[in-house]
Length: 375
Ligand SMILES: [Zn+2]
Image (cartoon, rainbow, N blue to C red):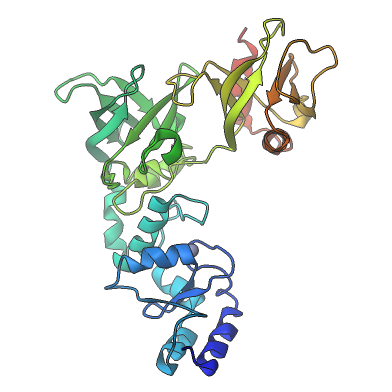
């Protein structure tokens, strides 16, 4: 039985600044604690802490008995003190996961901090800064959907990620320039807890590959980070980091993904259901979420440049379609979409508005110009 006095003291500690969010994932109102590390954490993170009992012992703040010594330790430490200690030397490119991120990311973050103490001892970060990495990953076949083991090479000198169809092949099957590459963890879409989607541009069109590493220890992509800023490749602080521990996110996450219906430019051929991915200003669509190539893309600029998103479809719209329409107006034409639910419609509109309300960056004009010349 929890005694009243320690319980009350702990409740007061939870009110302190720093202790109101989980020390590891920033989820609000943590009500678990590691009494060996002196941090307050959420239920989910407490489950991860239980897997490293040599480092962390957890208790429920409300339900477990506490003794005075443990409470005093929590009072002397707490999340702010632990942060100053365990996160003191995080490289600027390192992606810190939060509660919406997948289990793998959160677990590796917790292990990097407390078990490997990577952000206390900078020499433990050396693997991220290596300029060359190679290793095997399971890669989804472009057309048959089977995963096959492929050699991947990340070369800082070339500024590229490459993969080879045969281990002894001299010529890579694909060379993906770092500055045109984005990578996101997509476990549910790919159907593997370590599934990673790598998206890159080739001849200005988007290609996807889907990979995973069976034990989550993808050492391949660590490093390169410091160079990345110079390459404007800051967009994916992850690829490099995808590592045994800390699988980071290589990237910006997609603003939204999901099915919508769309019409072609003439709007006479009817609405077709497609999988859409909103990657910053690029709205891409695919027949299937795991397609290698985008069927098409729509660039979405800013309101200053005459881009608008409207709820609903023009009154003249023909044909059968889902009920909840969205019209995107660009300087050239209108794009019509239909969503299955009102909730989807509102989420898509929010995603479109997010980029429309933001002024365009100089380099985005070049992307816009490319799309304008497409039929
Ligand atoms: Zn947490």
